[in-house]
Figure 1: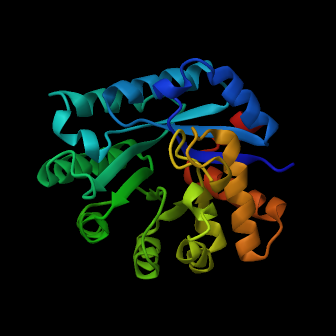
Figure 2: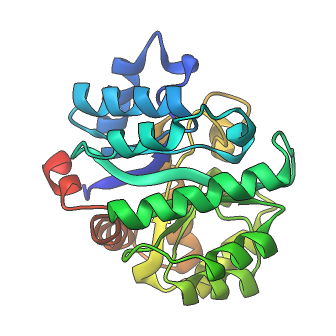
Figure 3: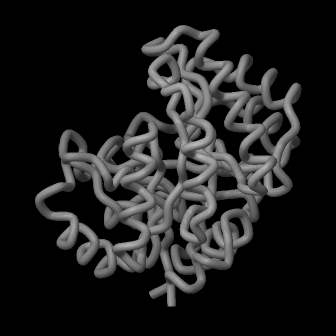
Length: 263
């Protein structure tokens, strides 16, 4: 079985508090050998780092989600900068813009997003970008700011073909999640044909966005296998072959540290 990597999850969620060990056992049983746990604020970023030190198969990303942009502390950026010194921290994020819920004022979202892009450049780490109902502004900011050498990934992508092309032109990878498996997600599956194989990643965003077979239930890293399998069908490709390519992509983008986590 090829190594499957869940490139975005939130295992620090309280929804995993009682059974995280069993969740990880199920992930290993499904062939998932590494999970990148993405922070959403200072607290969850700190927890992501702690998990990455406690569990060999977890790596971390640290950042502030746009929902929490208005609530950052005075020294939040220095806190993230200190966290990123850990070798298990592979990226900055989840950061970006969310104009669907607008839980933080748009100007605060943009300010915090730009600051994290600059931190990513200083730390030489890729960024994990969240964009919901905000692709035009996200693209504007990304084009105005300097980007890190490895650029980053558009997490749980839900935009259109033109936006895919613009993000690819900037050097981004595109990551797809559970919605790829939904019966009506024809457009999302069509996007698979627009993404070069070497720029494709898969994730769960657990505990959110469960694949169709578990829709309405808690998502977990083991279920990323269903995303790989549905993508392989859409691409008329063997799942093993696709998984091998995505593994190479994840290591290339994030770090050789993933190799140590996998084997």
